Length: 227
Ligand SMILES: Nc1ncnc2c1ncn2[C@@H]1O[C@H](COP(=O)(O)OP(=O)(O)OP(=O)(O)O)[C@@H](O)[C@H]1O
Image (cartoon, rainbow, N blue to C red; front, side):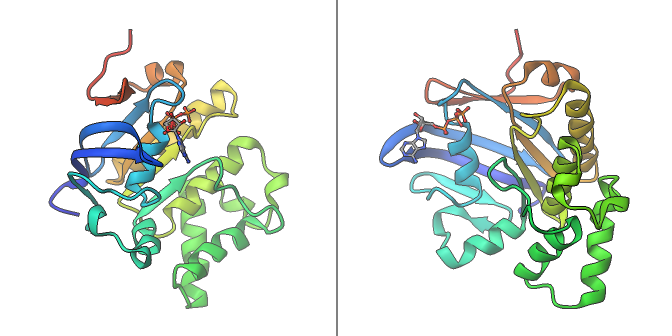
């Protein structure tokens, strides 16, 4: 992280298979900020997230995520970059054949944690943060949709990320549960972790007003007002 800046993209073009999706992107996200990301389907939201977590390669302009220079990112750096990012995506679901505890332990071990006591403590700490300490031994199918999403958020918090990236985190949830999930993400941002949330749900944005960035006509617009 350079100063307060967690994400910085300058004059960046974003491509999918040589097709230019977003051009001349300029975006800065600071520590503790909560930012909504909107745009019609196919406008480039996922592509923007992919540049940030190293799934698309940055070839033009400048880009930094935490202390990582996205332009110089080598394949070997990607797991380390992702440790600094908490990822809450629908296609990064929980392992259905393991308890909540084992799901979290799996990620800790995969990211280099070895000490059993520390793994136990960290697992319980993050579940406490998301209000699910009592669900440690449950299987994912024994949890509600909202509780499963809380476990996904707990998993994203395991390695104390500088930024949480969330893609439609409330997509399958009812309005009350959606509000609880966004409230939790807001609390996390108030603790200093930046949070970037892609959503199509304008109702939830109006309930929790915050900075909005929008993908539109191949550009990123900043500080957008909803009409
Ligand atoms: N793997 C890919 N190969 C080629 N083109 C792609 C690929 N993934 C996405 N695209 C194209 O890039 C553009 C932006 O897609 P992207 O997934 O970033 O949009 P989005 O705003 O996230 O859409 P949604 O809201 O539907 O998730 C679209 O025109 C899409 O067809």
